Image 1 (cartoon, chains in turn brown, cyan):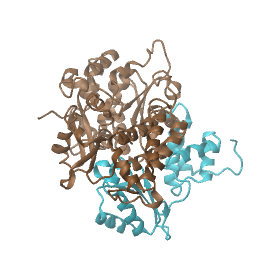
Image 2 (cartoon, chains in turn purple, orange; image 1 turned 135 degrees about the vertical axis):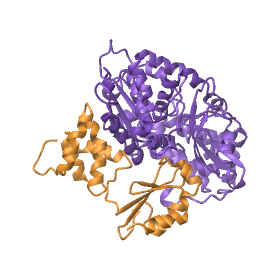
Image 3 (cartoon, chains in turn blue, yellow; image 1 turned 180 degrees about the vertical axis):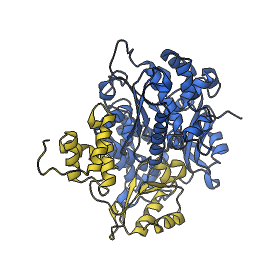
Image 4 (tube, chains in turn purple, green; image 1 turned 120 degrees about the vertical axis):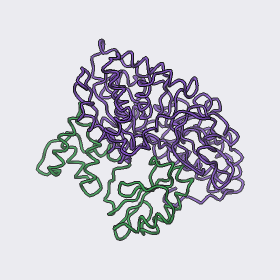
Length: 435
Length: 163
């Protein structure tokens, strides 16, 4: 099967991260098109709605629909904002980084078009603090664009004005949750807000705000240039276009690959990822980051799109596949992931604050040969008390879902740890200070 | 907070930088996290109580509010680090490709205990959560620069080249 690629088309070209390099490859053509045709705000939202673009940050929510939730400025004169979620931190996910480091103007252009459609006066690009090169590249792109009258007052001599500001996070997974991100951007602890009210009604500083992922916005100039029908010609009916598939773990060629939605995961693993490493067999895989339920090897032919993965009881998430070979210990993997959610819980909701800690302790105990059969039942009881929808945000669900998946698909392996008083795979223990 | 004669002061270069930074936001407090980053970069690699107090004064916040934010974010240090900081990712994709071996090797080579500083003060070694380098695992960040696709040989070479 051959397919068209566009997302990474400029990433391999030297100098494409500069304004001149970008402009040699259709750069800012879509922004010029909407401003000089001109396309109305409503037209831009309709184009994006018609394209079927779904958010690439994990939830898969339709982007155009999200934009349309912003209130009518005629009736609601408050300031309006676009916040760009560049706080990529779902374990396994490393795709937005590629776009920001190698093609930062694509993000700036997509953000300007989104801000135009939503009549937002300012864009805040919230980049996780560890992504120094990505931050510097996007910041340089914003400055170049400002100097070329593509950012700021009266862009390209039109009535459209929009400021773009860079903002650096400081390393908390929870700030990738959209209301946690807004709290953090306001200079507070990243404590997610109860919803409703939703960001479109009450966002940054209490004003209408939309939060979009980097890759989502990156798709927008392509949609404006080539049209919704072109976009819909790729991928599946319900998941249009291409996506960036980060694939990591036990495979020969880990990487970030641009693929249309709907390719079987097995084809992605074999054809792009070079297959499971060292000639070993597959044991299990995560379809879209550590928050999506672990799937057993016999599901590897599932097409990688939102509906197909959901039908298998997991989630597409960020499309970040993580591969576990036959020697891997799923209890050890669960221990590592549970430790992560325990570390990252913001502590507001008791189900999550306590639950993530318990899950972490129990997985650690089982992996280290001190677990009991009752512990396995506790994992299930605890996870069911943490999700779904029992807490302010989805971090609790993200810890609970993989736990339930492991108990469901790999109960025998948990029991083998309990009966054998330790890890049958003899996975090396975590360094003492790291457990 | 009111100004008192004892309020610690920030260097004037930082203050003028902050004067510009707060213009980016309708509420100056939004500049807090970027300000703390700059303080950490310029003032010894950590956020001291004096720094928090000075930042609080600047933003007209209570110092305890600044402490609340500083302590929430893993990138901010509340104690002085060694001359160099090695942050090793120990999340799932790196763990599957041997992050624990990297942790042990880095501790051995630097003489630092995990989450501690070597006796000569040269290296602080810590583990961190996913850094977004999953397709090039395992990895560590050395003083703000990513080093990816690590193996024992590369680790030895990288750390051996640190002054």
